[in-house]
Amino acid sequence: MSFDSLGLSADILRAVAEQGYREPTPIQRQAIPVVLSGRDLLASAQTGTGKTAGFTLPLLQKLSTQAASGRGRRPVRALILTPTRELAAQIGENVRDYSKYLELRSLVVFGGVSINPQMMKLRGGVDILVATPGRLLDLEHQNAVDLSQIEVLVLDEADRMLDMGFIHDIRRVLAKLPAKRQNLLFSATFSDDIKTLAEKLLHNPEQVEVARRNTASEQVSQLVHFVDKKRKRELLSQLIGEGNWQQVLVFTRTKHGANHLAEQLNKDGITAAAIHGNKSQGARTRALADFKTGAIRVLVATDIAARGLDIEELPHVVNYELPNVAEDYVHRIGRTGRAAATGAALSLVCVDEHKLLRDIERLLKREIPRMAVPGYEPDPSIKAEPIQNGRGQQQQPRGRGRGQGGAPSSARPQGDKRAPQPRRQGQPAQGDRPARPSRRPAAKKTGTA
Image (cartoon, rainbow, N blue to C red; front, side, top):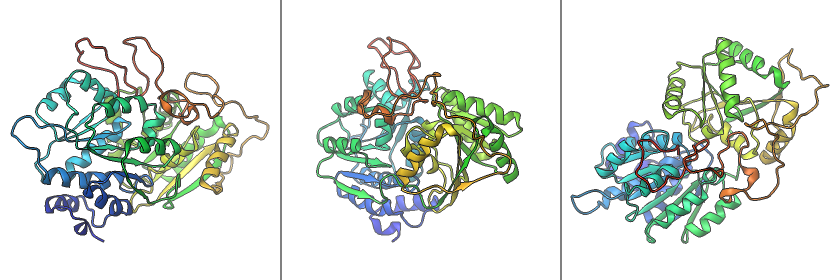
């Protein structure tokens, strides 16, 4: 099947061809006709399989053939909600690429940057708005955006939004949308929480699932190396150097750990930068751009980047520390082996992380192959210690209680602190979580989103 057979316009097909795409992926083949038909959709696919084009292409088709009436200010007709800045920027780039021959305007809004330019662009009229929940509500509170004429709502990476505690913000957004609209919910997994959200949001939806729940791509080779915690950085530097790895995405559990590892790698002569929620948007953008161009060899990231990074033919992902939540392992290694490419994922596992590894292998329903580098055998006399989170506290027991935001408390990475925390008026938000603005006149900058 080719894109020509999916009912897309010549202008969209021309833009798709210029991006080098010839045949739609399975999720695109199944999702595009459903979206064009006007039905609600609940879709799940492995990360890196083309979910974004699965909703952006038919969305552009619908909006371009059903133009808004009038010559005045354009109403926002399509809203795409995403959990992180990086993912919002990636989707916005795709929308611009695919709509380059259409008379449609799009805008990406997220926190960490001045809100005023975003308000100015909204005044000029926007057809498609890509937003993180916090910044969208900031703009709505200041009457900078009108959501009353939304025709299509897309929740992308909805499971990550629930994990990050955005459920209350999502509910606030939904309350401001017209009752009659098309709803598209895209997720890497069909968790129980996602199914609950879908039951409330979607009306008689078509369901598309092109991969088993929480499965890793078969195009990614996975390996585990057991090594003492204090020797991980030394082993990583040796593997990068001896293997001549030129582009490596490394995951840590905490922001402090990401900063420290990047500093140590630079001291080893390996160019590296860290990317996480406490970095300014400018620093995050520069680090990602340098990584894509090869100016730096290693990008050290927390799980905030596990969904939003789209790097063509990324060859190596390293779990310097295993995630506290097994599902995040799948999302991390999904940064490589995207589309038709292959990739390699290596996990450096110390004695503290044996239980986390068992959880991951139970999720994958198989044992990950082991490897060993001579000289880095773990010391059997070292005993396991409780895993520390970003504030130097022990990891909480992984119970089934429910935390803020409606997501299981065990489902949030302890180190990245993305769940909303009680805070005083004006206190900065943590990670990618926005502070709720007051009704007073806006300052030039608001919290991150």
